[in-house]
Image 1 (cartoon, rainbow, N blue to C red):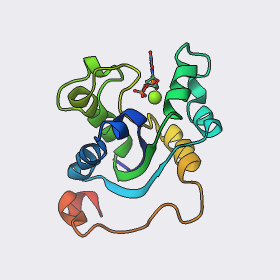
Image 2: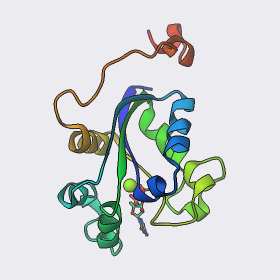
Image 3: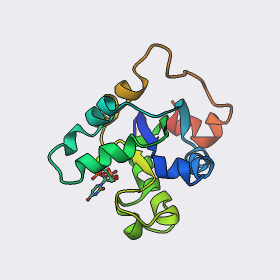
Image 4: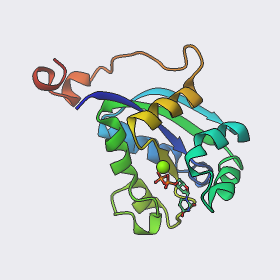
Length: 158
Ligand code: UDP
Ligand code: MG
């Protein structure tokens, strides 16, 4: 399992509902490393690019306007197999059907207002990280003090 980076967004519903801390806690507790963090009301053009794969879908216009309607937190997370790990922590897209224990399963009821975004492939992660954290110095290189306890040094960090 390769060390990966992935993009997570806390959508405006998560921010309005005061769930930023609890959602960030899920990722931190799991052992994912935060390498980028910012809060913005993102421009429409950036959100359109971010969701370009869904351009032809009926929910696209609402999705872009909802994502631009309020503050969004963008996170860059790093870890072994981080892309899949994050998707599992998020749960199914429709929050009402997401498993208990997942972020969407525990905190939401909606298909569209589903609290979080996570990149779904290495290609998407690379594109999305460049969009949201493409500026110089926006991603932070650091080694967590507990890294050697989160992973097996001999088997996974060698
Ligand atoms: N979405 C929606 N209606 C749908 C499908 C998706 O409103 O029928 C929204 C929802 O907010 C979702 C986003 O569009 O998170 C992107 O859809 P995708 O299928 O990529 O889901 P995700 O990868 O976020 O689970
Ligand atoms: Mg998606």
